[in-house]
Amino acid sequence: MADPARIDARGPRFAASITAVLLLVATLLSLLGVSTSREASYQPLSGETLAPGGWVLPQISVVARATDPGFLLVLVVALLFVWGVSSPRTAPWGVLYRRVVQPRLAPPTEFEDPRPPRFAQGVGLFVTAVGLLLHLAGVPWALPIAAAMAFVAAFLNAAFGLCLGCQLYLVLQRAGLVGRRGPASA
Image (cartoon, rainbow, N blue to C red; front, side, top):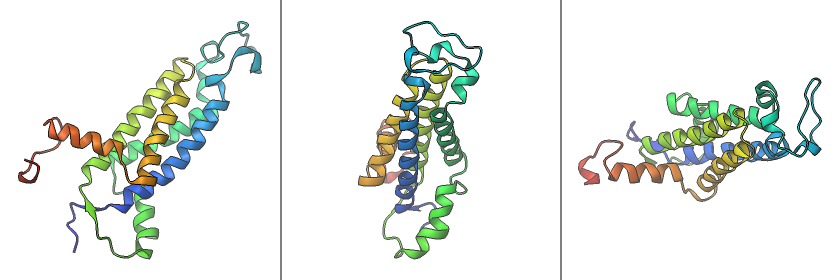
């Protein structure tokens, strides 16, 4: 029987796969949205006037920035990261993996500490939250750059099993900044 403090190592990769797809779409939507638009290519809403030749994002209202499709999808991903950090056992991709995917697979042979993947969710949350806040503040290109950075990290985990957030956790653990140092890590 598996140690309840350990998780099936395939679960986080499954979640990263779905997250990578969402972030790829979010990156594309944010590249096509107001975050990267110049005045000449943007159709202003009623009542909006734009200075000629400038970036659209700083000139439109916060409501218009918040209704951009790329923003909304990155917001959904950020909220999923919040869920993954605050309650990993009930997060949707983990539940989907445990109830639908895992029963169809051979029993797990590799288990891992759940703290690094949870920390990685927090890193993803941080990156997407910075992009969202800068987008709302009117900083052009912030949202697609943040979404692309999070996509690269999720893709590396999904495709190659390289979890950048987990690696960062281990570096910080060795430095004594996170986690507990047990006899195995000495």
